[in-house]
Image 1 (cartoon, rainbow, N blue to C red):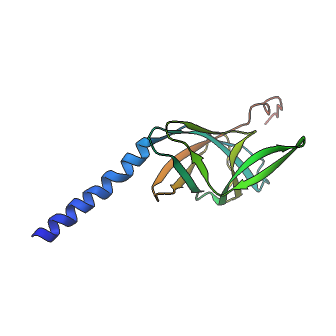
Image 2 (cartoon, rainbow, N blue to C red; image 1 turned 90 degrees about the vertical axis):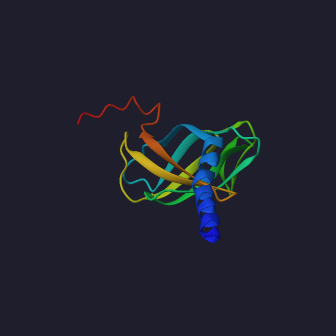
Image 3 (cartoon, helix red, strand yellow; image 1 turned 90 degrees about the horizontal axis):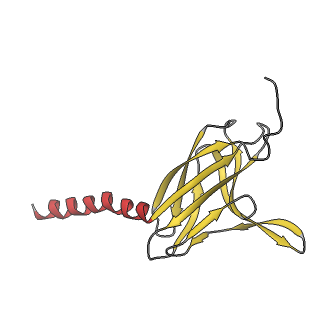
Length: 152
C-alpha cells in the first residue's frame, strides 16, 4: 500500500517539475532564416528570457529536421568577422539572451527537407539540469532579402 503511494507521489512530481522549468524560461521571436534548398547550413534566432532567480545554461539543441545544431557567435576580430562555436549558452538569472544574426545564434546543419517561409520547425532545448523545452521556430525570409522579386 505504502510503496505504491510513494511511487505515485514521485510520478506526480515528474509531471510537475518540467512545467516549473519551462515557465522559468520563455522564448520569443524564434525563427529560422529561409535558405536556398541547396544550402547545407541554416541559422536560427530567438530571444530566451530567464524569469527565474537561477542562471540557466543551455547545453544542447536538436531538431528532427536537422542532422545537428550548434551554438555559434559572430566575433569581430581586428575588423574580420569570424564564427566561434560555443559549447553552451548561459542566460543569467532575471535576464535575456538574444540570438541574432550579428551575435550568438544557432547553426543548423544538413536539413532533412527543404524548408519554406511559414514552415514550423520543432526544436528540443536541453539545459544543464537536464530539463528540456520544446519550441517551434517559424521559417522566415530574412529581412533585406525582400528586394528579389521572382515571378513564379
